[in-house]
Image (cartoon, rainbow, N blue to C red; front, side, top):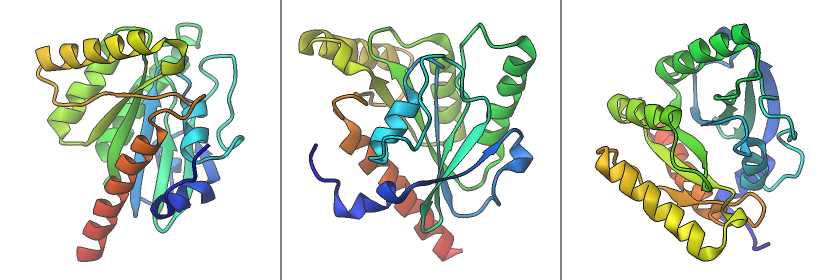
Length: 212
């Protein structure tokens, strides 16, 4: 594993703050946040652990849908990561799914400190309807979004790049100006690039806060 860039070292100091069942339970709406979202089986916790270079920061599970609240991680210096509940998992109780469907848009629309969205998708499958819906919403809201195609290590190199080209084609055809990125929480492929993108959002957001 190659060393983490010194400018991004604060990711290693990430710490769990709280789990918020409701938007009102989140920390004060100050500083700069990045939200992480994806389907329940996309490996969100593993990517968060790779991103912060910590094995047990975010709890991983073989059972999709385990993250049932908004999990908040502090990165120091007014920076936070929000781990939003996974979507698209049918086995979750209907009432809980309805709660997530209401809460996630509330967070994305209402949090003034939200600087960007890291959307995780599965590199082995075409981009799904819910993912495209989120990408469209971000475009309309002017919210920066990074689409990371996780589990690239499950594909050989040719298949992985074919999946990347297919995702680019789909997004171009739909007029969504987002550049997808191949990522693997297992091999750390693309993790440096994800970290650099989030760092840029944090830096820009903190600069805006200082100017106000």
